[in-house]
Length: 515
Figure 1 (cartoon, rainbow, N blue to C red):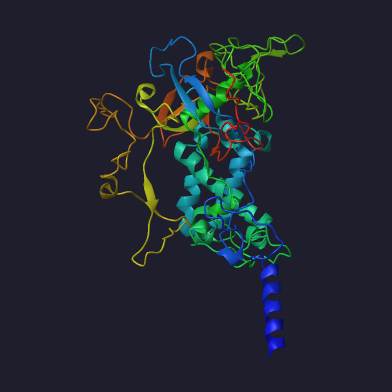
Figure 2: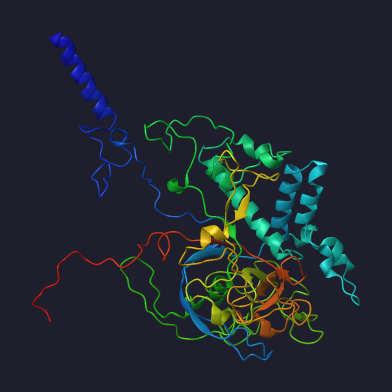
């Protein structure tokens, strides 16, 4: 009996050591508030991810945020006074290096057509298609562009146009889902066959939100020899959560402030940029630019000596009837749009933030936004929603596979201090508490459906190339001069991966004798 008890005790100790328990040689990170081990099944199994930084999504460029003067950088020759300069701060974020091209949007249409191939989804497929008729003009021979610009391989890498604000927003959602779906497959958390069998999936297609909410379950992948994720009991886990840091935030349209900040690229005007941890950068800009490039801050041509001297740095309309110059010396070498990687990139490495096509941003248009909005991450367009649940307290998916959303009720917002309404599109400028009255269709075209676009295009004069200029169009309308690019939130260090957040000083005590 004594030997049995002795052997049992040894077995228990061995198991505890193997499982990472009290006597284990395995080192665990400890909670600084409770002292309990993280990722230790013998201490509750609370999981702390090894991932501490956000990966950069496909096509994106990191933009280090900061403070800048948002608004007009040139004389307001139009007399709109809708972009009065004002200092704001923008958090760090990501934005596409280029405009979304025809080939990118056709990839989206291909997926839509394959996934929703049933005739009952014909409206869904048609709603995603760009309006190629935007090229037509009453007294211009543009029919070849109507028939070929979006589909012909010659225009694969040219910016997609004829896309409304709503269509651009839907593309961003689709892109988010496809990127995260591929991440799960590459991490061994979803079966690769899932990417092959999109035909006719309809509402059973993958969306990030339905996956995270547990409404969608991917096809199981093969068991991993060394699983990346484990549950609280140390067993392999085949699903990811937000806490794991594997999935990326949503792609979306940039806010007007983000777009303008990224376009200006003022980081090049800093004489001493911080490039590594422990080194301090300067806190100043040497020049205030008119356009998006730093080589010739107030001019439209390349000022560098050499063969490029005098070349136009953007695709725009130089004057009446002059879209590309004369034969043998074309000034911008593009009669309409140009390739998405053509012309001079700005200091963040972004192409065509001035010229080529205007770009949709997320904001609802109001002429006095610069006076009304917050000075941190300013944005007009908040409509607060939540995910819908049925009578069984389960999330509900719609016919397209998305988890349904409903607007937050007034009952839920009435006691809040930071906001008391669910719909803030016209907050302080058009609502019942403001003196502004927009009689849309009678004395103005401005409404809650008016969305801002910026940047200038191949059909615009140089004035509109300044990032501070702003115009608007109904969110359901499109143009041959408007395209878009996507953005993404940045989580973690504001200086980017490899840098710490905040200021970190040495633990050495200061000499109290020093004055």
